[in-house]
Structure formats: C-alpha cells, structure tokens
Image (cartoon, rainbow, N blue to C red; front, side, top):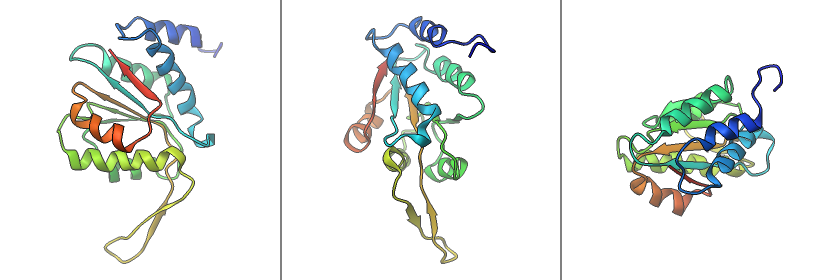
Length: 171
C-alpha cells in the first residue's frame, strides 16, 4: 500500500534476492501471498511447499511473509499438531505458515496436517468430529497453507500423494 510504502514490486524484488532453483519461484511465492490474504473468498485455496538446504533462507522468507501478512497470518512451528492448528484457525479464514514442517519426522502428525490442508483446499463441506463428551464438533477450514522444510523427502510423499499444491518453491 502507498501508506506503508510496500508494493508488489518491492516484495517481488525481496523474494528475488534469494537463490532460487527456478526464476519463476519469486512470482509463485508472491502469488501465494496475495491469494492467501483473500483465501476465504476463493473457491479453491492454494498451498505452497518451500524447501531448500540448511541456511538457504526458508525461515527468513517465512519471517518476511509473517511481517507482510501481519496480523492475519498464523505462523507456527512445524511440529504443531493438526488439532492445535485447527483450533487456532477457528472460524476464521487465514493463511497458515508452518516452518520446519519435517522437524520431528513424525509421519502421523504430518499426515493429519496434510489431510487438514486437503479439507482447506475447497472447504465447502464441513468436517464433523466426535468428542469424548459425546458431542459433535463441526468445522470448515478455508485457509491457504505454506510449509517450509529442509528435508522434504518424508513430507514430500504425503504432500504429492494427498494434497493439491499450487507448487514448490526450492531454494
């Protein structure tokens, strides 16, 4: 906005300063950020997987996105649980960024988060879960997710086989 001095060109220039494996990656990241702001209004919500070796700037990019998308973005450690993410989102439609997604290598946890992302992609039909008290909880997730990971190989299988992504951005 002109009030803050932040323009799409400045953000794209910032994203372009990283050593991407493809020249289109900064555009992909900017496109995700723009769509993430209005994710609740979209018929289909995109997700992005940001990967790269150690010290390539993934956490720096997550921090830049956090600042850019403040205060609407939910930025969490990648070891967060599906239930914790879902409860944090609540009834809102907000972008969710998970840094160090593969940090604990817990495939069960990753699988549950990927299932949540799948539900969030279209988010038209509510999900119902039972509780120990015998009362059903109904929710719809309408969020766009960004996952950042050093070693995507454990997460990559689940992502490519279960969640529709807008794309991969590799540093």
